Image (cartoon, rainbow, N blue to C red; front, side, top):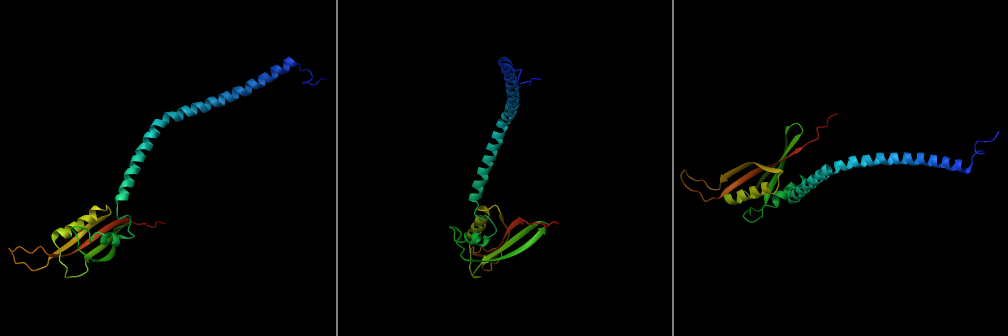
Length: 184
């Protein structure tokens, strides 16, 4: 009995190799066709992905410009933030005492209240100075709000008289932040 390979002649061997080669090439073409259809499907999503990336880039740029303009970045140094505006032009209120208290108005929310008052109780200020100081505090940071102000005339004024525009003040500046509720 002869082996099957022994009966192969050259033309039969060529036919066998070509048949196997065509099967291999057919499988490769099929796999490439599938990959091509996947790429085409992905290419259809490209315009929407590009628009989304562009939108996110504009949003990021906007947020970064806001963050760089924001002088009160965190609650780590709020006292230095407050003191930075005491010597600004049209303010000039000098040194201030700052005391800090913390309250929790609702679950998961913490208010930090900074009470600001002049260092010397004899200091007198115009309404313009006080107003400019409080305005600058709020205008330079979205995180702080003036929540209370107490204005007292420096001198007693009789009803109907116009005072000298000299005032003593103290004010509260509040920052609000979320707290970890610690759920278990």
